[in-house]
Length: 97
Image (cartoon, rainbow, N blue to C red):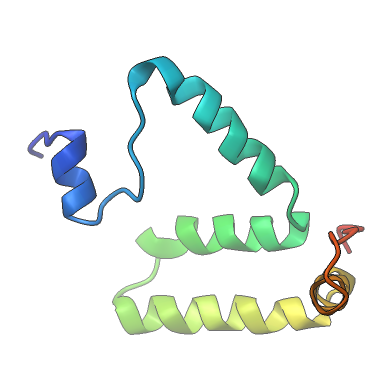
């Protein structure tokens, strides 16, 4: 493939943010902390959905797979805690169940 610069990748929608190289590690760690603060089950399903892209043929199959994973999250305790915390305007206390 062809190499493109960060600005071009941003304009094409391939990346959502770019950072100067001197703050890149700090920003990556910050994003990592944000992801780690979420429900582990949800993060695992997001990762599974992303990794399944190569095995699924076509956008419609990928969206169908993602929707199934999303719906299955409604059976988790973390989903209920997340909604309750949102309604109560507080940070969720995920149990990863």
